[in-house]
Length: 236
Figure (tube, helix red, strand yellow):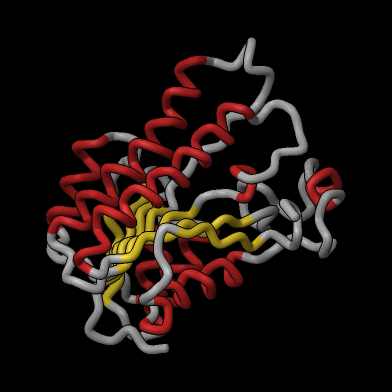
């Protein structure tokens, strides 16, 4: 697939899955812009490697995120990858940390997608990186996190109706255990993550990026308001 002459905007693109998505779109010929919150060194390195443009913007601060998207001008493909994970006993979790997670995982995804759609040409693509835990959660301590990922599902179904008349699609990609800084394949939680999986290995960021490119391509123009799980059978 080639994405020449198309502009791609990735929210949360400096590390992990986001960085893999930036690399894949840049290699396919797209003009790529991506945001980062705090990982300036990683963002600068990725920008130098790919020719993409790095922008500092906090996905959990609505005005900051909207300004970054608006200043980018018309966007053909919008990818929302920013996300936080807060877990633990819901009776003792810090309420401010939960609010911050909701700001990034839900409000950022909604306001970012809506703002990107304003100047998006007909036939554009919106892709949100969610989680398979929205469909199956076998572990305690993740109620607040799962709340945010389930909310993204409803958002995508609703926006699919709103944006469908313009042939703009919106889809959610739902990775399972994926080898990133947030959840490394050799980390302390890895054994427990592998137990429910049908395929006993962690996924890779590049596998998720490959699915992202497929859903952004012309062959996926009839797919919208849908959840696309890539989790080795974790939620099967």
